[in-house]
Image 1 (cartoon, rainbow, N blue to C red):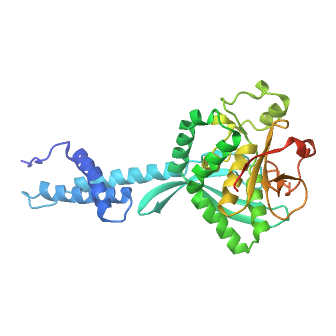
Image 2 (cartoon, helix red, strand yellow):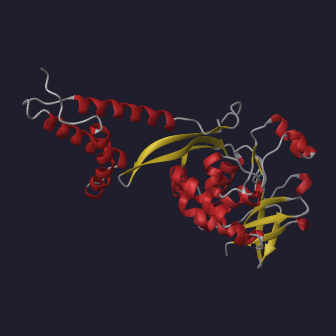
Image 3 (cartoon, one colour):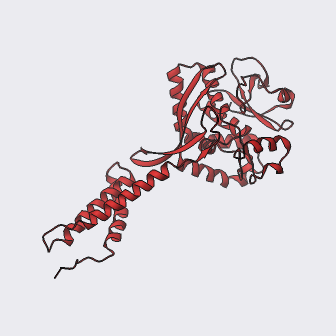
Length: 340
């Protein structure tokens, strides 16, 4: 007669539960990711229970190790599928694919998911740049939640204070992008103006998308200037965004941005690298542009005795000091924020 196992059908679920608990203990002693520590705990407990279960018969029971192997293969396969699901494809006909993808990496001993974009673009003088730009998925989610929770405090404040809040709050979470931009600067030995040109064209190169405070609607619900764009690109819109402006980390996580979404992230980046930057708004034109205090030529606004040269950020090929003909009356532009 065959000898029945001393352990019941709930043994393996118990092993999994204990492995989840034990993984945090392993992490406290060893610099490994949570998933790695779970694997170690699961395999050890499966081996230990298999040995104890077969002790009276003086043989090892492999079934728990087999169960563990099948579970781990399933988890690794599922993880691979989830990590490679594309988040957005904005314009596949473009020279540059506007493509955000998930990539898993290890940071400080833990496994994290990055929202990554591989970009290649040219500045206004024909120089080509490329890089891999990432934000952490957890930062993307937490920054958007924090921004949404701040709505009440910003309802009565100026645009400048909102822009400063977004730049100050999000800059630490742009560290991977700032590091990549610094690497490009070093590799190409860019001077102060060349680096600013590279940063601005990096953002200009990203296709325009409307950012609405309310839910995106069908093209026919909007005025002609908006309707024409949405009829050609139905995905060029993101809705339910506070004040109709994306925070910088949110923009880098989904590549959907309009004028002030772009001016704020460039303001944050160039401020980090020590530039004297401004943001200019126009109620008349319903538009936002960048201002940069740097030796240049063209259109500018004066603030505290300094010339801030105007820079259009929503379209390619606009150099510092130039604006579209229908936006170029500087009397309609007003500085709403500077970092000095």
